[in-house]
Length: 385
Image (cartoon, rainbow, N blue to C red):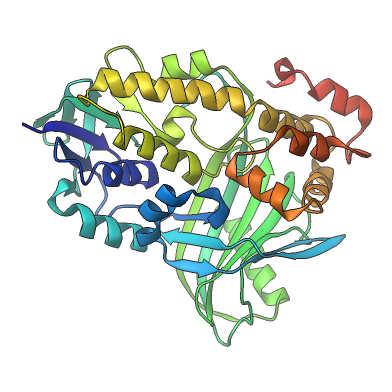
């Protein structure tokens, strides 16, 4: 008899994990999502070099848009990189995942309680399972010293073609406000694109009306006349300056509870908040685990991954401390500009979370774009607060 795996949360991590188990005859998956579709209102983007062959096979059906490269723009640097870039939209995630999983997806199903043995639904019914995973997004992330990436994105339709042939990952030529600010552009069709105004800031709050006005001003400055705002997405993503794996895991996975994954378990890139590479790593690891799939065995494996992730991202947390603690907020763009002058393979390894020791040394070589005294103060992880 197949073991029952319950996954609460139909975002990226929950969907990838469900798909990783889809072909296992010994596991019966149920994916519970409170919304009326999977993926909410999100867009997930990544570099093709982030993924290995198994990861590419799992993710490819979800991809909505593909480009052969991307641009970055700073006041002192404009550069085109040839790293292939991909985006998954909520619509493409929902369509592909539901086609693959079928009746294993239960939409419009709120969860009021999770434990190691099952889920309690909003209507009071109980769904029992041998393994229970919580993929419902971040909570307080205890044990992590955080700053924030806040953003408002608008998918807009224009009166005329925008002329872009590839994404602009960072346009930091804009006025630097509230820390490091950049505009992110994804050209979906000739006359539609996602325009996202993003801030690396100390506080998680975002004034939607103010940022929406800035997006309108940016579009006007590029000569684009917006005829329709098709949709919006907004958020506040965590950026990690310091990490305590034990405190994070104890808080996220209380004894006897469901197993957290994704942002809920602190599994994301500390500098960019990108979640797809490590969400995919989690899904493939769990989907390939031998033997019985139980909450206890899943918890052991994810807990080990969390501890490895915190250990292997110590350097990225150092970079965040340099960014947020060593210099003035209005000078943060200089740090990112300097980074994007580095060789393309190094940049690819950074985003994929596979930096070499030589890469780490290369990033720090030369005159730093922050005061030396501030850089020295930011070195110890205990300086994060």
